[in-house]
Image (cartoon, rainbow, N blue to C red; front, side, top):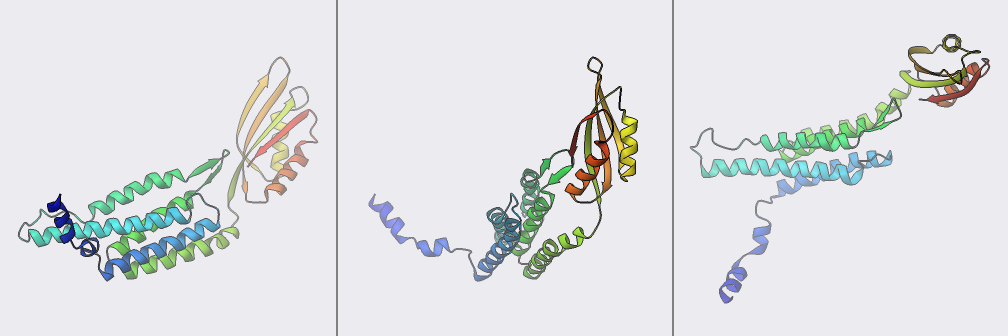
Length: 249
C-alpha cells in the first residue's frame, strides 16, 4: 500500500491531464464549440428537434475525433519513421464520424400526413456542422470559420427567398357522395375550374348503401392552406349528393 501511495504521489497529475493539450488544440475545440452553438441556436429558435445541445455536441465531438486521429498519426510517425505505408490513415476516423451522422440525421426527419416531410434541413445542418467540426479539428481554421459564416447566412436568408417562390404542393381530397346523384367526373370538373391538377383518383364504393368515397390526389402551386380549403369546399359542397369533404395538405 505504501508503494502504491508513493507511486501515485510521484505522478504529476496536472501534466498528465494536460498532456497533448496545446493552445492550438484548445483554440480548435473552442471554435468548434462556438460554431456548433451558433448553428444550434438557429435551429433552436425555429423549434427543431436537433437544437442547441445536439448541434454543439456533434460539432465538438467531430473536432475531438479529428484531433485524436491526427494525434495517432503523428505519434505513429514519431515512433516508426521508417515504416512507410504502415501508419494509420488520419481520415479513417473522420469517415466513420460522417457515416455515423447519417443515423442521427435520419432520426430528426419526420413525416407528417401524406406529403409533408420535416427535418431534412435540420439533418443537413447536423451533417454540415460535423464537417465544420472536422475542419477545426484538422487545424483548417480558416475553412471552418468560412463554413460557419456561410451556413448561418444560408439558414437565415434562404427561407426569405423560398417564401417568394411559388412551388408545387400536393394535397389529398376525399369526397363522400351518393352514387345516384353524384360522380367522380362531376367532382373532377369542379376541381379543374379551380386550376387544380388531379394526378390520381382512388375510388371506393359501397354497393349496399350506394355511397362512394373518392380520393383525389391534387397538385397545385403554393397558396394559403385556408384559401385552398375554402375554395375547394365552396366548389364541391354545391354539387348534389355530396355528404362529406376531407382535405389533407
